[in-house]
View 1 (cartoon, protein in one colour):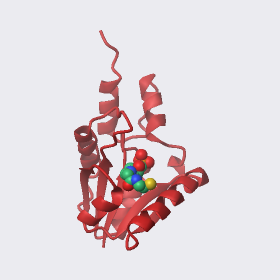
View 2 (tube, protein in one colour; view 1 turned 90 degrees about the vertical axis):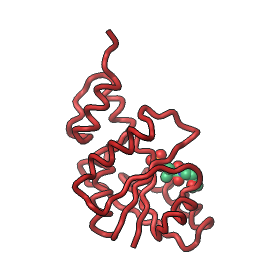
View 3 (cartoon, protein in one colour; view 1 turned 180 degrees about the vertical axis):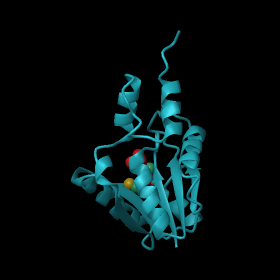
View 4 (cartoon, rainbow, N blue to C red; view 1 turned 180 degrees about the horizontal axis):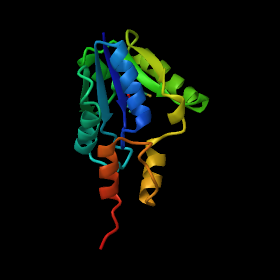
Length: 160
Ligand code: PNS
């Protein structure tokens, strides 16, 4: 079975990687797809985010990383995915995620959304929180993999 894990991943965190590790155990192939979102101004380019996830998942042979534009359900159909994966950190995520799952179900009835929980220790984590800490030079080793930490330090390096 092929699963699609869509998101912004700006940047990928250990919370996302929990979800990817679980998906890798559950599905034959999991495609991590980064949305080119016209409504958001990301810190990292699509290419950077793709490289970050590829490096962080290099030990998982059934994980692929791609990018897309437009509706997630259309992209899922193009990729022959039968399942959408979304991560849940806390009950506060649930309302929006359920709305999105129902919306996607009306658009593509044969595509099911599966919610996976990240590990407890990452339940507070978001890409925004990571960027906020990194911007002010706080410790992020416990939040993102080493390659992403490096990219964040470069992005927020003080100008001479
Ligand atoms: O990581 P994010 O930003 O929470 O991911 C949100 C994402 C990319 C899954 C969502 O915004 C999305 O699917 N966008 C594509 C447009 C779409 O299909 N919209 C209909 C579903 S409400």
